[in-house]
Amino acid sequence: MGLKAIFSKKFGDFTLNINFSLERGTGVFFGYSGSGKTQTLRAITGLMTPDSGIIECNSKTFFDSEKGINLPVAERKGALVFQEKNLLPHMTVRENIQYGMKRRAPLDEKSLNELMKKYRLDNIDKKYPHEISGGQKQRCAFVRSIAARPDFLCLDEPFSALDNPVRHNMRKCLGNVIHEMDIPVILVTHDIHEALSLADKLFVFMHGEIVQQGTVKEIIDAPVNDDVRELVYFSHDLKHI
Image (cartoon, rainbow, N blue to C red; front, side, top):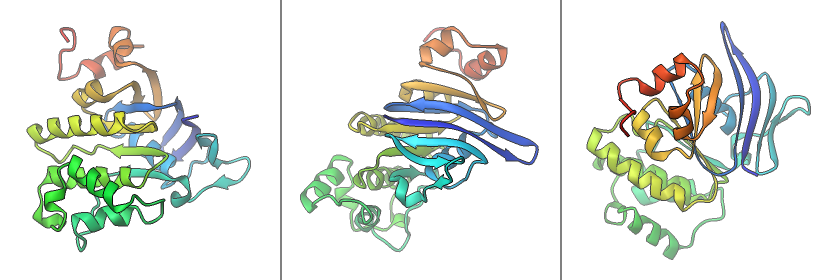
C-alpha cells in the first residue's frame, strides 16, 4: 500500500536517483532548490518519464521500465497542486472545483456545499480567480483536489507566493485536509517551518538523491552528515524547539 518509487533519470550533467516509500500521511521532500524534489514529484504524477525504474501506488503500477508500463497522468488518479494554484481564470470558484471532479466519481451537491463551507469558500463561490485573495485561491486549489477523491496528493511548494501570516493559516488548513484523508501526501518545500509543522516523514534531498529519511525528530537528532546538519539548521536554530 502507499507510494513506492525507485527510479533514475539523467538530465545532462545532473542525474536523479530516487528510492523512497510512503504508506500514508505526509511525506515532505525537503532540500535546496535544484536538488531534484520537483522532478521526483513530476515522475510520480506522470509529468516526467524516468529512464529506468518502477513507481507504484496502492499496488497499482504507474511506471515500470522493464515491463513497458507508463500510465498517463489521468490514469494515475492523483492530484497535484502547484505553487501557481493553476485555477482556470474564466471559471468561478465553484466551477473550478466542479471541473476538477469531472474525471472522478463526483460529490453530490450537498457534500460539495458542505466541503466549500468548511473551507470558507461558500461566500465566494460565484467569484472568479482574479477577484479573490491568494489564500482563497490556494484553498480553492486544495478543495478542488480533494473533491476529486484522489488516491494520492502532491503539493509543489504551495505556499511560496503567500505572505507569512497567510502561509501560517494555510499550513493549518492543509494540516486539517491531510489528516482527514487516508492517502499518501507528498509536499515539496525548502522551508524548514513547513517541514516541521507538516511532515510525518521527512525526505532530505541533495544532488539528485534522498540522502536521509525518517521523522523530523530523527533527522534533527541524528543528521547523517554535516551537509544535512547544515541544511536542517540553516536560518533557524532548532536546538531549542
